[in-house]
Image 1: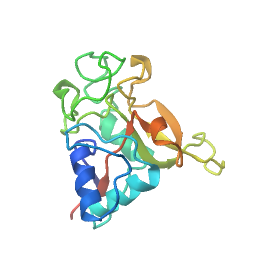
Image 2 (image 1 turned 90 degrees about the vertical axis):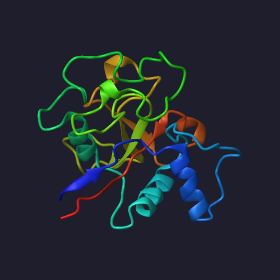
Image 3 (image 1 turned 120 degrees about the vertical axis):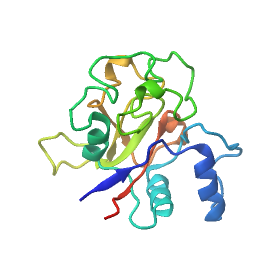
Image 4 (image 1 turned 180 degrees about the horizontal axis):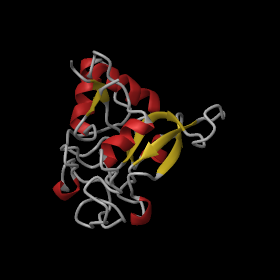
Length: 185
């Protein structure tokens, strides 16, 4: 099925609008509006946000959808091409935290999707299993893209990590998300 992926990670300002619209208490004591990617959001909260943001079927991307957006039809190693570009991603701890979304325009895909590498890891809807065993039991979900604190060598369009769906918000300090929605016909 055709889908569209959000061009940026969900921002703190975006998530605050969701909390206010749903009259959901903020899980943090203070979270001023900003263009920084929201982090510390539990898996279930991210799922609920995507449903709210795109009421016609919004959800977290599956791992294969996230990778297709990052690699493109050409199968790039990085969203911008096949060679590492230090000016294309907030990775390798050069910056001590996330940057406002879209701060690295050299890292944008040809289709206009920002920050698929670096800035913050991103939740996917896929359980973390070996590729060849779709029945393995797991309590982890795949995270992709690497964060500001990820080594450059793992900040590729193909590297995957795993994160428990239920964990402490502190463990998610470098993990955010983006949503997908069905493509309009």
